[in-house]
Amino acid sequence: MTGWKYTHTPEYRRKLVLDSTDKRQSKYKRYLQAARKMMAVANVHDGIVSKVARTDANYFYNQLRKLKKKKKR
Image (tube, rainbow, N blue to C red; front, side):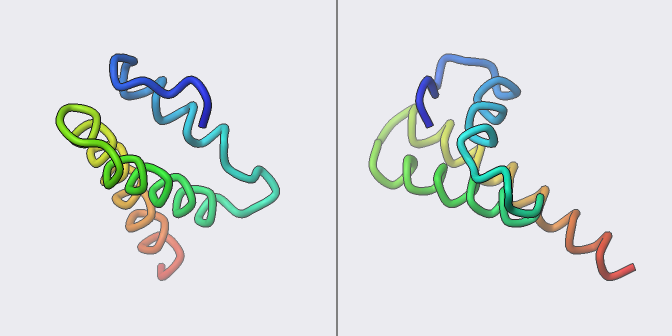
């Protein structure tokens, strides 16, 4: 996850995190991997970095929920 900074825009930060995941995996596994990476960053840091990382992690978890709903249909 090189290049990730809390000062970047949310779209760019999330793109960097997704680019750092294994591209051979399914979309579901890549989003899960990205969410876990962001939670790890949030747990290590404090202050604004933690808040931004947790927000990004929640975004990926929400995307996972959407993917699950699509699969069930």
